[in-house]
Length: 593
Picture 1 (cartoon, rainbow, N blue to C red):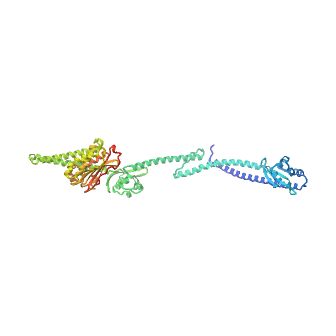
Picture 2: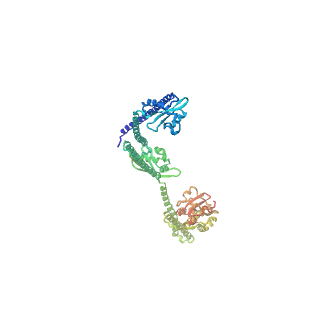
Picture 3: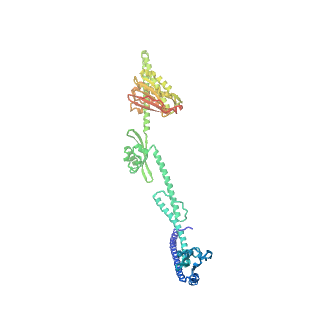
């Protein structure tokens, strides 16, 4: 049966009254009981003492029990619920000769001279209040008088009815209290849950099995909270996903409000424009990124109300080129401008490299072709008949043709390596024979320039997993440059060791060195630190670019350390052969410069 809240309130009130009635009835019944017991005890004591005094007045020689029997029975016959028993001490013989009353322990204590005894006998119904008084004559206990009064017989009938009503009221009160506890507990939980729900805090309501208004309210509140929790979780997941996307984007993203304050800025935009993205929200854009092209783009987009583009170069230690696109932003009532920023520094640099490459190739090809054309024209115009000089002209044509052939070969090799079309045959190649072959190849040139070629005899016998021909090309280019740019009396030294799981090959020289301003670009195609001298030595400007790309194709890397006027050191790291992978790092040592 479904109880409304009104009836439950009435039940609670009735239960409270019942509990009050039960308590009041219990207190009254206890007090009445105490008074009845006290009355019975007082009545038994007074009559017992009075009869004992009358018995004591009888002549000593008379029999106590016989003398008092008629008077006591006649005197107390009219009092309901009261009995009198008189015991003569003359009965104190053998136990079998005593009467049943005289054998009671209370009588024995009184007859033994312990004085009056009062007690409640609950072994029978109704309970009785006893008072035994000794009869003393001439200093001697000649007997005892026991007066017993029924306790319950003195209680009126309405006390029993009150007790029954109290018991019924107690039951009603217990039921009402139980219903009240079931009502108040969920209400308190609902009140706390509603307060936490309004504050947006987490809380849990148990599934209610009640069918009343409290149960309906509890279920509705719980379902509402669960729906909001799921919605919050979904919103949080989408927000986290959006933040992760923005955080990992390479492009910078800026959302600007109508008042030109920052609504959103990802980390990439902060890195590009030089501000802390985490603290940018809510601040004016002009205060965090003071770049005139950016502000002009923002205002132009706001004025034209259409997407606009621009590109500008950031000043600083490392100059960067940024491409920006601004478009109007409208999401609901939100209005503003979205700016996407791309760092196109590498793209512009590659475009410049391409243009420089075309210009350099044209220039490098033009020089030998012009020389060949000039010498051929000279021969055609009459030098063929000049036996003394025509041989020299032909030699010059041959030199320029050889230079042109070397340049074209290097360009083709570099193009194949860069495009990944060069086919390499990777094998476990020992370093020592390749180094020895390379030094033998340049021994004549080094002797002509009076440059000493050395190798570190303490270097270990190790193998590298590379293409043997490609490794020879790397060594030939490095040793060729070292010999060319080392003055007379200098030293070119080749050494190798194992370090950090790689074979480290080092080519050192005591030559002219490379200026620090040129070192970052030394591996670019056609870049020459000493352009005039490079042309004198016959270099194409592609050797180090080829070395770098070959080393990278083999899974290694190359580093340069150089000091102008004191020489250079090129360190090449190459993967070890499989049998040398477990060799302890650091075996052998490179020669100190």
